[in-house]
Amino acid sequence: MSENESKLDEFLTAHDFAQATSINPTDLDSELIRMASLYSRFGVVAAKARSQRDTCKTTLELVEAKLDKMLRDKFAAAGEKATENKIRSELVLQKAYVEAIGSLNEANSILSVAETALTSLEMKRDMLVQLNKNAEREWAYSSALVPTSDAKEIADKAIRSLGAKRA
View 1: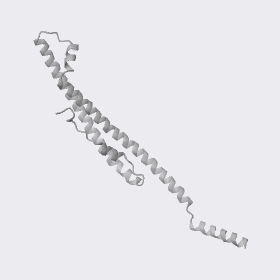
View 2: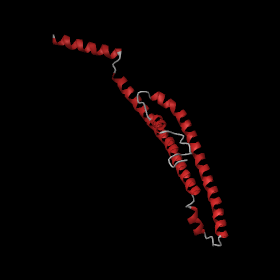
View 3: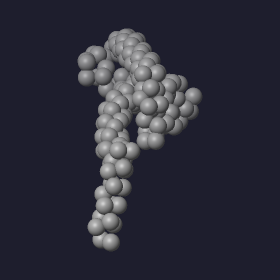
View 4: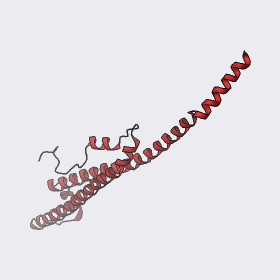
């Protein structure tokens, strides 16, 4: 495996993230309806990312324990005293340990993105609710300005009476 290849699952692409958190202001009803399924989907993604991170933690602990034993045995065979500092200094130089730390860091990053997606969906929900309230207020205001048939008749009579008085 090369340095740029990852053996971890990303679970979520930038496109998925952008598409899920964008808002179509002309179709608020559909946007609100989609929220439950989106939140469910990204909740599953976050759970998988958390599980992956926990697996990486466990792997790191196992690698560390195996390397610790190997190094203690190596120092004992050479007749050297195996101090904690000496073992730690050697441990962090081991390729398996460095790879395990890298995997854990990457898994933490993936989990962070998944949790951010959930937070973004919560923010999107709040914005949709507010946009919907604003749309209702605008509709109510514009409806109040539309004259009813009675209002039209009264206005027409008033205009005719003004015209009759001028003549």
